[in-house]
Image (cartoon, rainbow, N blue to C red):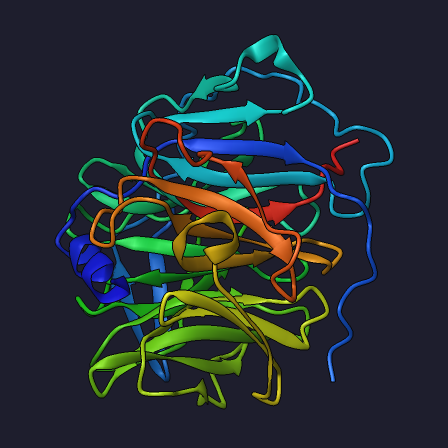
Length: 357
């Protein structure tokens, strides 16, 4: 399914649109113990000049105050941000505050469509994401309420820039781009303004879905031998090697907060492994009557994990929900797109505490 999704992206088909922030809280438990200018892209010693990124600030969303999770909700209380099909909006939703109704409060991003691939900055104050504008997909950052919208890439209508993630110190963005190769490669660039992008991979088939660990390792997916594997490399692109290669499609890597474990999607479940490759747990969504668990994201305190799961028919991906559980798969609950509600298509969850002050 990830390869089909990847093919749709390369052909410019629509993904999930709209941003949602959901405030959640669970009881604290002990975490599982693990055993303008032109864009200059450097490939090895070769430098290629690409169309420049603009410094023009797009219209900002209206400022609103984010709700605060209930006191005593535990270390895992905070925000899960994800995309929702059907609107181009930032939605704040606090299940303890009914003032906005069950759908949350919408804050439109003017001029942006097909918003996807959301990720919180390390301090929780900003978002990075991909959005379609002027025919191409580009990387943007904003405050979590949609203000201070800034476009980081401008690479033409046929180029896809997506799957962004932050460096541990918040100074850089790693992302996937088709700017040099239709299959897609991994790049890094500064997070504060448009500027030069550095190419980290050069592969005949797609490299995608980078995730930057606290220990400055980048995990990513590489398509080879007819399926995708999980690779890791240093932040400068050196030391590329396979971490998980089972002959199945592994995708959606997400680092544990300490950087010593990794979650990923495989065979319609979420697996958690230690950095040495040994398995910690496998999580399915059976306990809530769902299937095809994927796109995992750890809670900031490491006690829980959120992921996407389907409640529709086996080949029907129109009833997609956000589910959380402990790392061993217990304590599972649906936090968005509840089973039995009208069909919903949710994707790209990312979890960060509400530490905005």
